[in-house]
Image (cartoon, rainbow, N blue to C red; front, side):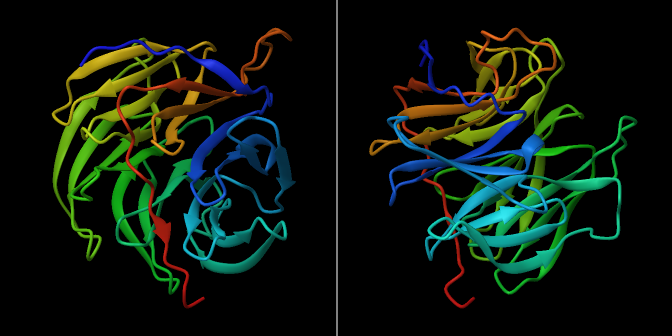
Length: 294
């Protein structure tokens, strides 16, 4: 299926690095982080109501929890944040706390009820020293993939049988067979290799056709790949650097995309904002972290 997307600015937030948008169907709102300002945001889908919390310790990515709280990746911690009171209520786990030059990056809740989060080498001379981790509700931390420069692009197929994962500095997208019951990975396959011109793979989402939507942060595009890795759409984005898509709304056909604000960009440019477009294909509903016992 070939189609065009028309983006409009939902929220002109001017974030440094807006990332990790996640739609909360219970509250009918969008949560996202601003990594550069250590902030967590909530905005209604109409754009009418917007709340921002500054979070000590960083805000790198977020997911929903069954209790209504959020699971939040900080620089080297995974915590629970309660948006009803605007505060962290519990620490779940530390991830690479003794490694000074890495930090947590993209994270999402998997079909197994665990929080999957990767690290990135956070220095100018980046090397493949980062990893992808599975963080269980009981606080267990399991390293799943090594040899990454900047872990990114986590997304699962609707049936939970496939995990997509990228390295923004690799720059590649891989596909894994995934066991939703145990979180076991197998059958790694290189889905796509990208460059600056085609769009280094940043954050991602999947749709009900098992297609993978990747924010091409270096090229001002949102790329859509088939499950076999064929590029079926390169959708132009209204600002230079999209960072992550997600699907929202009752029908999950509203595509919301965060962006970053490059240094020196013009005052009238809406980079760092949140943009929305209607999609003819519905997205996959996100999973919730199983925090019922914590």
